[in-house]
Image (cartoon, rainbow, N blue to C red; front, side, top):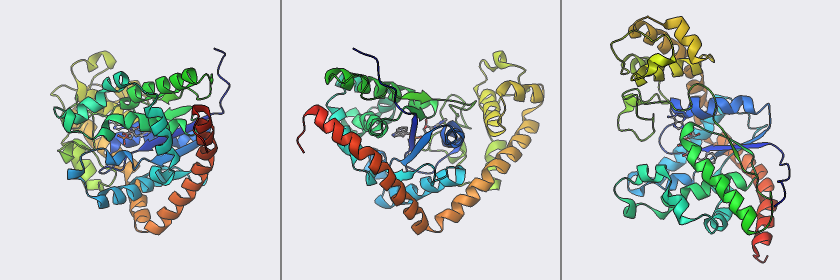
Length: 342
Ligand code: TYM
């Protein structure tokens, strides 16, 4: 098999409009998207069809709609320039779903059986989960490959899904003897906070679905709530560590230091040099001030944008038109490659 052709750099990423975005989504993903815009073409999607995969019993149609606008508002407030990088919702570009079906026929059941997020989300009730939840990573692969995206900036929890996307791309290229047709998308997992942990339990990921609202800082929280959640965050009785070796057995200390580092655009080492030996109560006050100063302007801008859904809608529609113009010829190619007529 010959070498892959060189694909022009293109970044694609997305977030699910389920519940409210939190600090993990911001530091693990959105914050890293902003500087990428200066380096390559980017597409940022609100993956609304993914939001249908969890249990509809807990979700109202209006929740997905509201959250779609909120996620789009967060993208813009967080620094994505929609004129430069199209922002759009997935369901407006039907090529995602069409390619997902074709890729469902490429992906193997054994591959999906290994996906840890499905196991976590379905829990003990695998057979009662939606089929959509099971094939979710294939739709995610389609999201990326329908644009031949080369880079995918995400948090650490998406690593396995991206490996699957690469496997699917490779198998498609092999099965249909089109070497290098799809690029093998590169995960871009950067910064000191690729995995932000719960504020209540340093070994659990900060998550939209955690029952405790105190476990996360929402991008809609006001200054008081942010400060209070940080001050109440679980810690241990020891002073702040000196270096990373001292993180052993201290996941909460590691988490708060990484959050500080990401918010202040520093390394964890530098933050430790600054605070080593101090009490958590002092550190938490400084962290709370830093978090409020960085997040409050984003929250305020989100609120302003959310007051005008029509404006967000114009942005999503125009983003979808641009995205569709990129996806259409690729899907047409793929259909030809697999032998579909039309
Ligand atoms: P989602 O909506 O769960 O999360 C959106 C982004 O936030 C990151 N993230 C975190 N980063 C650090 N710490 C955390 N605690 C944390 N929680 C979430 C996620 O890694 C992600 O980057 N499957 C994806 C959405 C998706 C997608 C795609 C992403 C669908 N299609 C194509 C990239 C490309 C998801 O559920 O993300």
